[in-house]
Amino acid sequence: MQLRIRSITYLAEDINGYELVDPNGHDLPRFAAGAHVGVRLGDAGREGVWRDYSLWNDPAERRRYCIAVLREGEGSRRLHDEIRVGDTVETTLPRNNFPLAEGAARHLLLAGGIGITPVMAMIAELKRRRVEFTLHYCTRSPEKTAFRDELDLLAAMGRVVFHYDGGDPAKGLDVAALLREPRPGTHLYYCGPAGLMAAAKAASAHWPADTVHCEYFKGPAAAPPARLEDDRPFVVRLAKSGGNYEVPPGETILDMLRRHGVETRSSCELGYCGACLTRYVEGEVDHRDPILNEAARKTHLLICCSRAKSAELVLDL
Image (cartoon, rainbow, N blue to C red; front, side):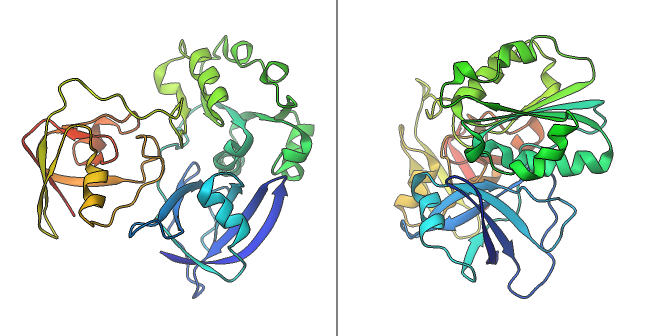
């Protein structure tokens, strides 16, 4: 989709908010709380540089998508330094690997830094559902806390708790203590930097598996999926555009397609964000991502990390 930047707002130190709208004023495709969109930035080859950003506005809104961008990394720095109101950017349709559970009695939300963005949309939806929730929001300082004004009233009501650590996690929220005793009927959601993600994952290991939800835009340690010892070459056939290409050991499907000039989309390239999700029509996939459920794996794969168990894999490209 081609969307126009209608406004840019200051949310906190090094964090800007971007409001994206249809250039012709039309409604945008619906999204659910927890969803994100990919935004194409720069000119790094044919495929460009794609980065994923969570949507933080109320999912009931149809005329805009709102993202919050921390000024770090190539794509995000370009948004801060070069993109202006009135510019047009290319985005994907909303995707959601972090949906709210239906029917939960209460929701425990844990956000760190820019990880607050999908949680803001969740709060809007939970308020509409009139469901009990509590947010623990971890940042370095009030100056680095996006949406502080919007959350102050909820904090006064005891539904939001701010934690400032001054850059030393040991002085912040005790995640282990918070998650030590899961309350029946409670679902946990967490999103944030690698340290918070690791702490929350470890502290919630004893929770019922279907009550724990998280969003990774980077791998837990920024490490790619491990290569298996039995990696072997296989052939990828493109059903729509034609072409047969061999994928050798040590090379991903994504890299092979790029090498042959096939336009692709990606972001984290670690198997967590879902930007490179691709439909396949024949073959047996060796799935190596941690995010797709069994139903999705019957029709789709992530080409940044998955390989083939069969000699040939036919992609719907």
